[in-house]
Length: 144
Image (cartoon, rainbow, N blue to C red):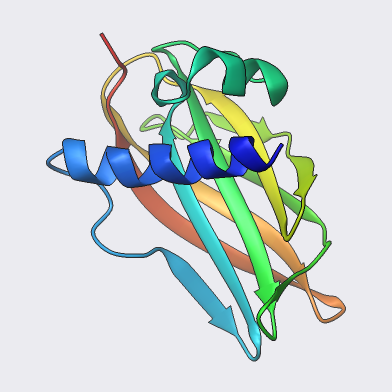
């Protein structure tokens, strides 16, 4: 599983290096001493064995969102939920699953990506007994 986290992080970094409109810099929100890191990418950036071990569908038409929550420098177990909307405002619920590895806890979910477009993500994260909401837009490019 430690390899899974490494590959997910490499995939996120690879995406920003490859795509012209990719994420510039680190994506995070800070709530007091808690930091929520998040990224999205197309699942073909994952190696087949990594996708299989995380039970993810590896496809040019499947996106992945990865969320991690750090409090006082340590990963924490929390509740993560959310939705992704397309340009027509059609909303798809995100079904996050928790991945726990040595020294890391993160939450991943998949969503369909049928064409190049900007999607609006709304992520709800439990922080210190309350729910914090993060909203962001991300242009996605299905693979070839």
